[in-house]
Image 1 (tube, rainbow, N blue to C red):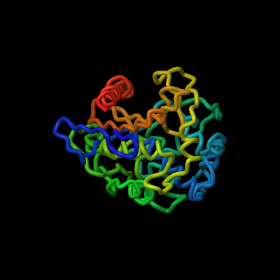
Image 2 (image 1 turned 135 degrees about the vertical axis):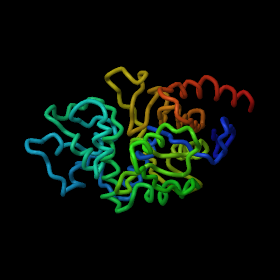
Image 3 (image 1 turned 45 degrees about the vertical axis):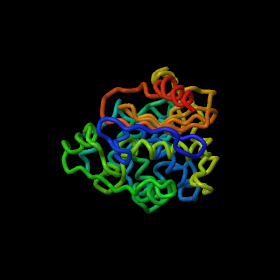
Image 4 (image 1 turned 120 degrees about the horizontal axis):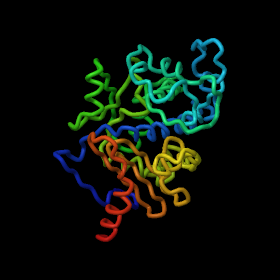
Length: 308
């Protein structure tokens, strides 16, 4: 937990050390939102309203497919891109030779762009493809140079699974991980999951956002991007515990300024500008744990503030 530019509380359990990393699951998405913002700030990506296919001129559009041609980066960032079929086609994407192209195959469809919230993980791989085409860098290299490095987060390396079972064990294994990011056969980091971080480094990312994109006097990502990224948008389905959504960040309490990166197993980067606090919670695999925001707000913050 960080406040006022410094760490004010930290604990480790279950044999984990301070520098040990865990697979932060879908909290990866929110880190990717920051990377997209950095690319926009630096003019590598023109706008979130750029069409997705502008980055893939060599992609062969299926006959009769019109919807895909209108999909933008904004649709991906807000989880409002249209898809063929329901759910994530894990097997088809992850067994393919090119995960970006396989994910593009599932974008679009006959229903047109409805703006309906459709949460996806594996098909979000298109964003890594866009970052690669826009920057000429692998996901992990771009993150090391423009995000992790400035924050003092250890440099990360790609982790590539050789088999489906190795992929599975990476996802659900409870042993400490290194500073790695799961990557596809081309070396592009998975944007929907796969990043490994320590709780301390998660809190640093939270404080970067808390300080409006500034870290130790250096503007890592623009204030404009932080504001756009955390602007709440209603999730019409009423699911997801009633939370709103920004650019790959959850908004637990619309109107209160709180926002969070949330991954399965209880991985959270929590930011509350009003209380001037950023919290990182890292947890090894335990499925369908989604109460960490409640834990932070109802247990951790009152305990730490009461001790100050």
